[in-house]
Image 1 (spheres, rainbow, N blue to C red):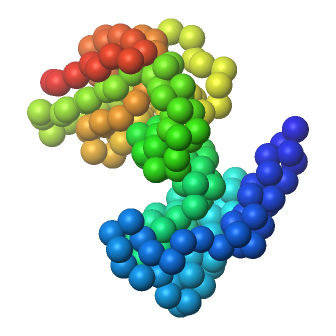
Image 2 (image 1 turned 90 degrees about the vertical axis):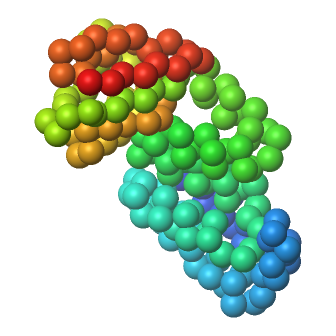
Length: 187
């Protein structure tokens, strides 16, 4: 099964290289030959990162592609979303998918059906710890989303993004995340 994902990523990138793209970005800037070459190079970085499971490298490649003057193909956004989901960054994954056209946007909406929007604000200077107190999800993307939030809370004391529905605790304070709803935790 794992190889089928890699094959689809390779096939998608090959399609992108052959199909080319539009010559103007959405803001009307020209996408010259040098910019197209850069998009191809960055697409390669994105593809290689996904193949290796190095989602950080893949996300950097996608972010750099977005920063070029070239309009990206829907498939670029799809690959960018895969990179973000691999990191557990659901907010950025959904944003990438929504930039990818109608079908990708529909998939983003479907993804969010099992997540709630969470804002954790730290009013003090103390470090906080985020824990999921009920059963951990089986879905690897949901597990990564929890790990991503935990790393943000540990580093910054704050997090704003999506978590899978369920029961959580932050430094002793319990809260519930419900799909499609927003929860704010301040301490």
